[in-house]
Length: 188
Image (cartoon, rainbow, N blue to C red):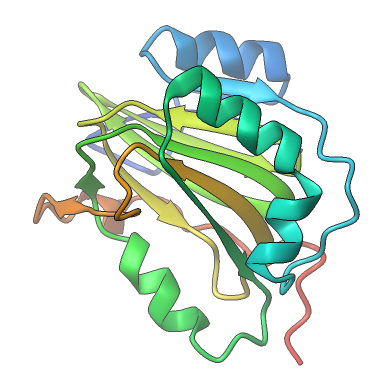
């Protein structure tokens, strides 16, 4: 189940509020300029699927988003618990950073956790299959896939170079909860 927990940025111990209804999550995130939508992720894709397989399965959605928003590049992150580089991939995203373009992700399988640092609050968003999140450019955030990643996400970019981050150097991400393993994640 998708979830939003909102914290003060001074402490990750007790959330100010917790939301599990998609409409409530979309409303709360919309108030701070973050896009959150529930889409149909009906194609049978599992973590570990190839980029070509995933893009082919969701070609109509990818083409529509690229045309609507002017995105120029697309790729896929597809990880399962036995991926040999899972720890390195996880570490790459765990520190607070920004982008010079919107960060758009459509989760077609599994789950991942975006944590957004906006003003004096932290918005922890557990995204699951069918969730599309659009984090505006310049928004401080980090992403966790857990120690046992189990997800497939389509990523869309305005920059043809793809994912380019500017790390803030702040240690705030270390003070907030990490994502637990997805229930479907089984380490081989």
